[in-house]
Image (cartoon, rainbow, N blue to C red; front, top):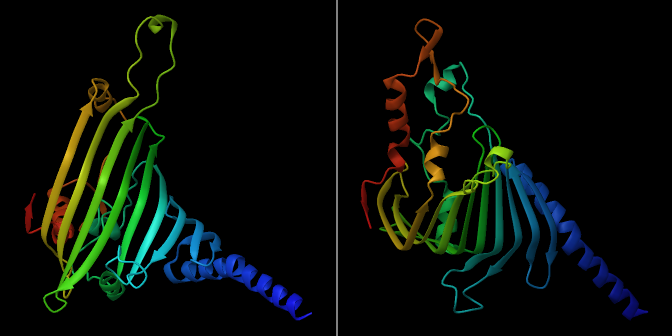
Length: 293
């Protein structure tokens, strides 16, 4: 009888950990970060999250498996916690840009976040001290369904992200390395017509780039956000641009004008130099003061 109760208790505990706990964790993340999260299950005894889906603003990110490693258990990790992700798939549909006649569009005509007077969140600094990220493979697909249609497919393998605090926690060093990365720009192949049946169809792969990347950024951990230095190392770089890319770049798309709000006379004004000035002011903190490779 005691054995049956023990087995029943183990089965209930297993069900709670693998099925109920993912629902609670997804609910907490949704409430905390205002994103849609679905977690398939949790495997034990290594506590790995299976089939995780994150969606927000039309972007869907799918994680096949998220695990954890620690320097206490293996010498291959130099941080207390290493977040290990086996496969990531990112999908995004690119739509036509929209501009609104409002004071908000005047402050941000391009939809770019204002980085002035921004600070690195304390949570990020804490993670940088004790956590690292290793992604085995990552794939991203950006699809534009409006004319001219195109598809951007990018993939990378063995992506590592690590950070550390130096100079009395005033400087944050961020290291990123990509063993191999590839990006392809594709378009829909036009259907063959009787007049062009004997002629070769234009290539569907417009351009392709492959590279191995290592980067190190020096950020201001205290005070306003600022990128002080940036080191960028590129290896095994290869770029291919097909002839059809130039005709594709010259293809006509739906015309539109960049509008801004003129507060002085409450009417629409055309795109002007003030918008360029605001754009440069907003992005100045993320432009490295020193950059070398």
